Length: 224
Length: 55
Image 1 (cartoon, one colour):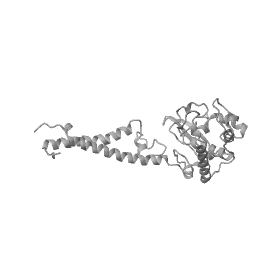
Image 2 (cartoon, chains in turn brown, purple):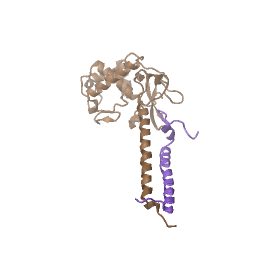
Image 3 (cartoon, helix red, strand yellow):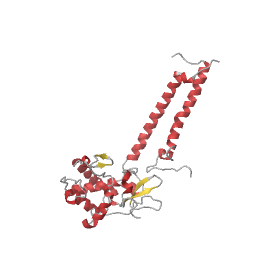
Image 4 (tube, chains in turn green, yellow):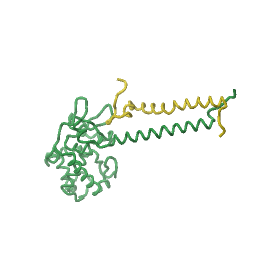
């Protein structure tokens, strides 16, 4: 029997390449569908049934949003509406948002949609980043709702949301940093919508982004 | 329990495979490499038989 070398056989490499390419293509298609399910926005029904979604329903603005370090996942995770003993969101503890905690899905969706349009119209991303996208001149706004600064200002304005809305309508008057945010002519209604958007965005499970968020005192495990 | 049913926010078949940093990688590589071992021995058998069509 002649000594043969499979390694120098064209057919072997061709079959291997076909197999690897085929399997990879199928896997990528399956993973794309998986990603689509992961990215799909939750509904009010999910919140009612206590189903965790990476992007929760807009009605999340009715609930208290906190963050807790998850040992299992190795980063901070959102806790919406209180925490169960096993460290999961309870979706029970509500928090008044501009005097209400009963926004319907349609109302909340319309509000955050207006907030998104305002954020786009006023070009917030010229200075800020949202979910990591934008410019690096001003702070990332992904978890801006949970910035402990607003908690300290809340009593004077009748609530955190009022403090942020007042700031947005005339930022130079409440400047907190040498890089002053300019007055962008945001109206009262637009400011409310932007705050709703910020609150909604802070409830998105971003796999621990931004990385330094856990180091902000008071932002994570605030109930300790 | 050795295998956790779900380690992700939204559970799926892939989140079950993700039991740690290496499990998904090892599973996918096994899936790709094992049939290549079979392809290798299949080709070897053909070459030894001389059953290789002209290119």
